[in-house]
Image (cartoon, rainbow, N blue to C red; front, side):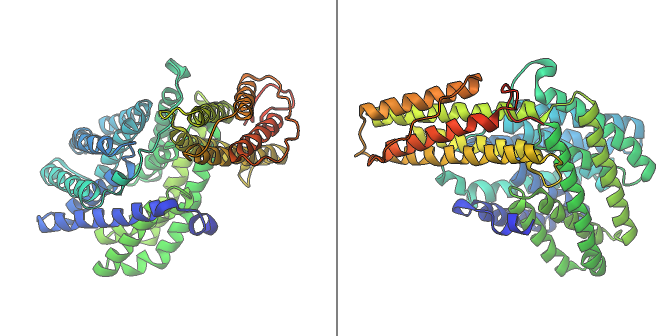
Length: 496
């Protein structure tokens, strides 16, 4: 865990800037709420709204991010009103909460914007339970949410919009399909079923903190697609929560809500959430757990018994997620891994074709955009293969095969990056050998995605042309991929 966070690469200091801006935006939102005269409950609500706006909005363009941010209150405020109005009607409240869970997950079919709005809707309902919001508090909570979103937007799009200097990041579209063949539809049903289990059992454990169990189930489903991904994420959530509770006993409980040190530690936790999210879910959950404990300290209700209850409710939520993905319309790791690997290979095909066209003199060809897309797709491949390479995976042969696939795909990406760099050189030229090598690469990708055999390339002599060198390296990597990508039967990609 330590290595993944502190040794993980951070190209362009993107994670560092992301985290520092979050601390600035959320801290400023809380200060503005305080200056506006809001109570502690209003300031906490505003701070969480700012956190969600800065964390969950991930559209590819700055304009898209701004549009999604504007839409957040249109989704969140009605949900907040429903949660507060149903405070004294538990049956209606619970059914509404489950409906928000299902709709929030189903909204992922519309890409990053749907995902952001779904998360904001769920968390708005969750925060209302966390703060025990009532209808008379709604005007203050509305004002705090709107004021904090405006402040966060001013920091993100005005004060420090570093994304304007970066090319738009390609965002892989979610897997398609119709009806129950669509992964987001199946996940919406799974999440609702798991949340229903967590809600019922969580209320048996605690009539006041049951929403922790529902929250655990929800967040285990976020950014996962397959059964294996969800199981690994559940394990990491429990691990992060356990370590966070241990830290809470050492730090948050002794502080007992003391103002200045609690504020400093809250800032550290916010930084940790944003900085570690991309590399370690366990570390992120550790920071989330400590942040929640510090907030309970400010509210004056933190004690060791509450921390034990949080662990129990997290376990209930994780169990609900596990039962849902195993028993309700399961999506296998094989299905998802196969789809993402094939999309990555088709991207290799497209990048090779773009590079060849650019080397042939076509100024409109853009292999760089394909390289960026390939990096995003490989990120999804690594996420889907994570259950297969997890230390707790009891099948060593499958683990070795999955690691080999990842290594060879990384080799492909490295050669594609080199090829794109050569193609960007105005002095680079096209010849018959280059055309033949590009054709062989494209044929190899078609063979891999089509399930036919690949002929291993003959040994290539050392060439002085760097484009040819990258193509020969890519050709060798694709040929080597043929063996681990297929099971012993020779017909399927790495499976669950």
